[in-house]
Length: 187
Image (tube, rainbow, N blue to C red; front, side):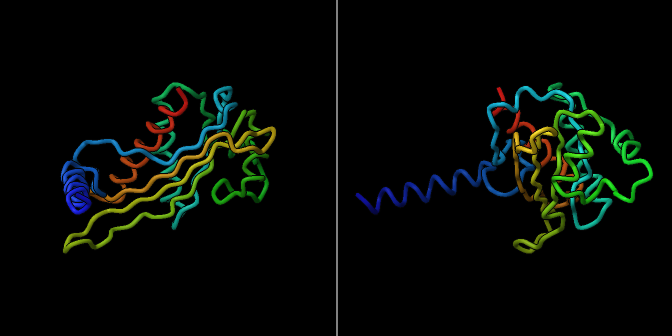
């Protein structure tokens, strides 16, 4: 009996992977990101999104732009334009990319934001798997209250795309899945 249950479990796992539950997201099934939402996160309206930390400044800015687009689709937030944040910094030597959480909160507060979105792109590359090259992207994002410095929500997600996809295409998929998972938790 125990052996039969083990084989059923193995069969179900293989079936799940075959239906798209594995690493590739080309099958159209949305995967769920790892999400935390604080009870008071729903009160936030005006948000500043900073460029994400990444292997390069261009990747960080590009991925944060993808995340901004996904956040805008929800209609939940009024987003402060990055150019406005740069104007707030004015003549200071501080750049938007790579700010610490404390610095990001200060910039957000100066721009009149209720909260600030900061993020990290931990993976953005092509990886070899089974004789194929697949794009792999991993992103972690937090919303931090501009008054208290408290984390209001946090979401992280990673995924591998299909053969022929680029890391930029996979970043779009991962950002979309992150915001969809976040949105489901905030209902």
